[in-house]
Image (cartoon, rainbow, N blue to C red):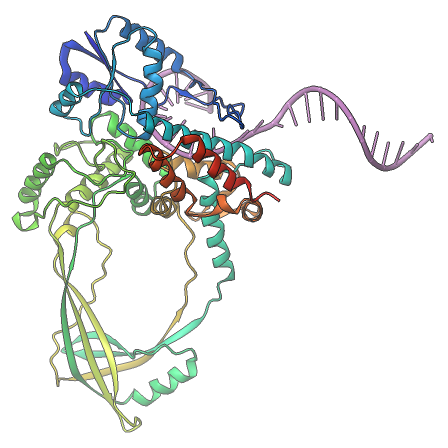
Length: 535
DNA sequence: CAGTGAGCGAGCTTCCGCTTGACTT
């Protein structure tokens, strides 16, 4: 009998099926050891750290040890990334007390052959990767636990907190709010004509932005009795590629925008769908899709929509950090599912996005028509522009809503005369930038490399819990405290507030993984940088 | 005698990232 250990119990069940009776497959349920919560747990001089059992994990480890005692070989098959390697390290430390025959198994997809392969090639832990996790973890602890007390003192508010992720996130929200506050709304005006051809009405616009309504009125007055003729027709075809399949950030963002789900709700629904075996792993930053599954979906597309709707499986550039075993978020199969309520709603969003990602391009026809107005009141004729946008082939938008608005124009030929129904002025206002929604914040964080798929939802939650933000008309509005805290941190800890801090740090963590740097040096360098701003 | 200041000790509380059940409402 052999023991095979993974992180997730759902994965454990699947792998158990693949490996059969010779193996017992069990899960760690994530991290098993971590720094203690109530104290710093790190010696600031030596960077010696104290690791304790994560709440409830003593039991897990004990039962793994019990199974390990009577196992031939113990394989630690946690995720092939920085955090997974650290989990493997702590699990191995414990297992070694009862069984010396421990090996690290690494696999990048969950298929019978990949798992068998990982067992054949099982070897040693990658200690450099473990060290880079130590650096990441300890830096986050030092920053969080050393900076937060400054806020307690400064504001006599013991709920406040600061951190590598939450503080730049809060800055995004506060910066945006300031932009909105200082935004001056300006009105501007367009002169437009309503034209008619064979009973079809359409609009044409004079392409000049008037600051002053009386100037616009003046022009409108001059052309209102004019004669209109088509002087130019430009046609352009445009192809709109299908969207990428979902990853955590885009799922949260789209579910927020299209279904109105808060990020936390989306994550918990998706987690359940995953546990039921309905969708793939819901915490991922990879767009990868198994080619076997893609083929299965494409057959379904052909059958449901027709062959002309079938696109192709594309490869997308992955972020260097996304090295995990996980695919994109997609249904595990195309069996008809009857899922009730919000589970069904979210599932159908995921299904349709997955299908769309494998479908053909949308084909648009854009038309730009120049309409010349001549009038005795004008020195030279004036050209108005009418813009048309028509969907020639709907492609992927059959499955997933596209953000495209059609503008139909009648058939128009050069030289044709048009009836001028009326001339009018359209008043517009400059728009302040929008507040972040939960979804757009998550997408921005992802783009900046701040936070991880497993934490996006909790980042939003933390900001709310600390009293930094609240939901106002589905957007994140910062509180008075948030402004004060951001200003304080900008003044005293500017490095922490730099949006690229995480990226710089990530770079050095990579160097630890490559064996180029000693992890403690990296911790000292970055912690030093953060704290050096203190007055 | 009332108000002030120094000194001491208790108690407040925090990070990010990996995973779900075990709770309560």
